[in-house]
Length: 91
Image (cartoon, rainbow, N blue to C red; front, side):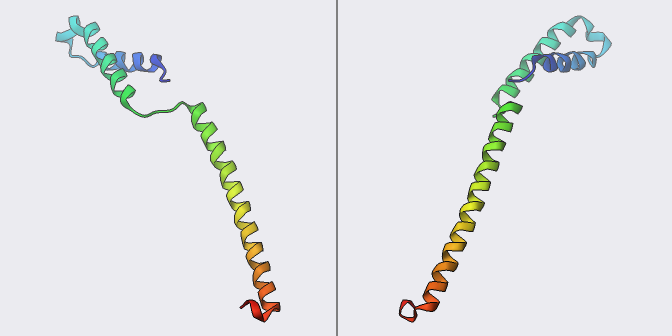
């Protein structure tokens, strides 16, 4: 979830950039800025840091398992090649 405090702060900063002649509409502009920012960020496919970290750990475990399986396959292939080398009828 996106921290709304950051959106509020950004909307205030954008509102402070409004020219002095439009000061009376600053509050309304800040609300519009806030709405546009929330809408835009809401359409993005974002995840929380916690979700990201969990998926990162899953990926690391999966990579470790894949590497272990690759080593096992390589060992089995080596054993098979050695067995075939000892038995010419297997070639």
